[in-house]
Image 1 (cartoon, rainbow, N blue to C red):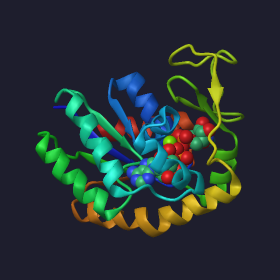
Image 2 (image 1 turned 180 degrees about the vertical axis):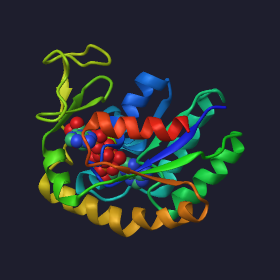
Image 3 (image 1 turned 60 degrees about the vertical axis):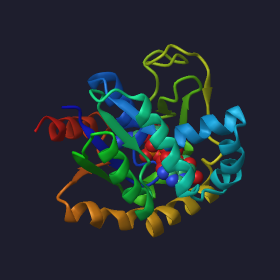
Length: 217
Ligand code: AP5
Ligand code: MG
């Protein structure tokens, strides 16, 4: 049975890093609402036009928009593809919508993995971050460079980019949004016995090994 997991944690916690590793190693599908929204902004779609300024300010895009993005993507997946929700859900409304969407697609939530991190480390992580311009695999100037300098490990692209919302001021707003709107959904999943804590301050490989151990259990 395909696994459905949520990776939860503040900006820079390592959600995208661990999700892309699970795509590579476990053949799961990464559903990152952040990546979907950035693609929409780049393509200049109506959703992108609505989301651009909100994202640049570090605030949350409306539930209606992100719920629709997830719904459309789940429609295109086959039931035997495991899914990692990266950066979704982020509000109580999104969590409720996800329950409905999973039920409609014959899926059930297996784990909510909370990456526990020290907030002081996040600005450093985010300010050193860059990612592949083609497949969005995240890297870091010091903590996670491509194996061959200048070449993406996953897709071989030689183009990289930095995010417009990765600056100290916006990061503060993103953290405040996380504390006010996203952290409160944790108790919903705790009450259902789904939350697993992983030390997100460990080196990337150790975080990955801890997640693998949880998923194999
Ligand atoms: P989104 O793209 O989801 O950004 P985020 O939640 O702010 O999280 P990040 O992507 O910044 O961090 P991450 O946890 O993925 O960290 P990463 O692995 O890259 O959302 C962006 C915006 O879109 C939001 O602000 C909002 O406007 C909108 N949005 C998206 N989803 C939405 C939703 N559901 N509802 C409403 N609005 C939504 O790692 C960071 C860096 O650290 C990397 O350089 C990495 O190499 C490095 N690193 C990772 N792990 C480690 C480690 N263990 N040790 C050392 N370095 C590490
Ligand atoms: Mg991310």
